[in-house]
Length: 250
Image (tube, rainbow, N blue to C red):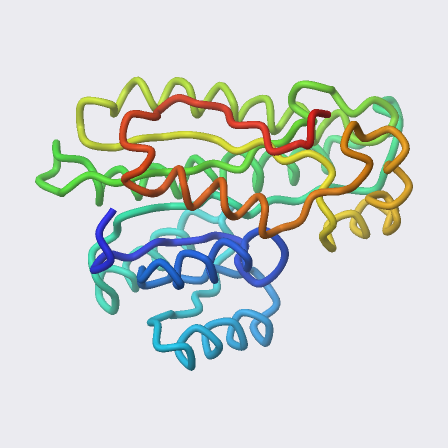
């Protein structure tokens, strides 16, 4: 990827998304920072990038809403350099629960954001990256999870299922657009020390899981971001359809 192009990072106001946006900016890319609710955090990160000499624009959009996704990409088209990469990071978990206690509403929200949101953003990205449409190519990185392999029993099998869908989507799309200059890969984080665990009612999960982790520690958002940025880069020019575990051996 060239540094005169834009990378869109969804869910960029915190955690892995924020770390990825910052690292991409350090590599010289213009950053489109998507967020759903936390405008203050997204604006602060955008200002931090600009203060360091980079270029960034915070963009509010619920990725599960097709109209909002379309409007977000329209703003990128109008206000930023051409798109060169997409990081589909926006996602949600829910309270830890047995499967038989879950509601349809919970499942619909989970898949709307984690799966359909990623697909909507990827669709718009393909239209702006593919040589089929006269563009210069680029890269898409989807955020999956080690949960796709492990199933997350008694915690959130619905989340695990949504991430398994991301794995399959990644493989299929990668093959579909490989001859059009687009590489599509996924990163599958393991236990990462971010704020997302609080959303499942297990704020101390990263610490509680240490005895079960092969490396005896949780990962960091920056460690996941390093993998994402490598997959976006020309250093990964022959890598597509890959599911890269960043899970410390878990």
